[in-house]
Image 1 (cartoon, rainbow, N blue to C red):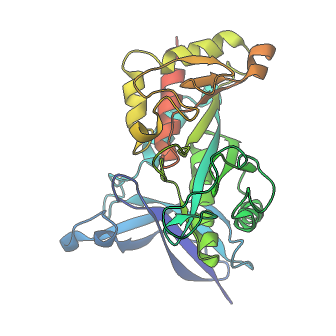
Image 2: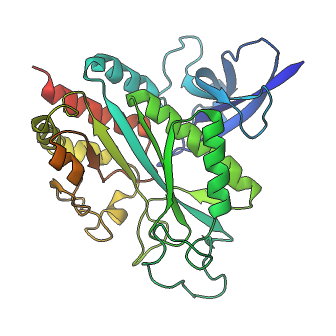
Length: 338
């Protein structure tokens, strides 16, 4: 007997990397080991030296194929040296996570996305320049007029649960055809592994419905919400006292940190972080309790309890989560290190 291992990796496409995958047939009992691919076809190598290495880092049961089949998330390495490829952002994330392991960082990431069919968001009128009714009834909506794509969301949620991904919720978002799922709480590296795998399942399941799932930060121009990846974060100190909450906010907004973080918070943040549609303008930084127009929100329950977590609302839907979790962990934990 044999089983299938779907090798999944992140390519070198700019400004937003794409996910790639291919299937390897393995004998029962054999472990998915390193494999190779043509990096010249994924923006990761020249044609005259095209080999790249896939190194498995996170394996889960394949909820689509079932049986003994698995999904294998891989990092990309250089041949011969087996050093991290320049597009491999996971390696630096692991380094920071190990350095600050004593802080026990935890993340929850809220992945917003938009379904598209025939070039328009799912559920939008297909002819001419017609638009749906303005935003208002769609967020957490119920009903055929308010919702489009629920059957895909349900299939994706079930698949994540069956794969053992730490998915913690879903909801319809502010624009018709826009949805969100949440992953976490998990560690600095683990939450990023889980988010990439959950994205793969979202894209793959959407295929079966003839729909594209987009993580564009501003899928429709004009008076429509963009799509973010609000990132919730805490350390053991923050989970024990409010002073650490304030210190974390101050660190993230510290000298040079606003620009450094925005540079790693996904392509097109200028189009999304306009100061409208529940965002702060990207040129400003502020934090506040229960303020969804702030750069960083302190939930009201955290202020009431005097401990908990913060939510960085600036990351785009199209973030590389390895970059975002590395930046936040490094900034907050470095500032709290004596």
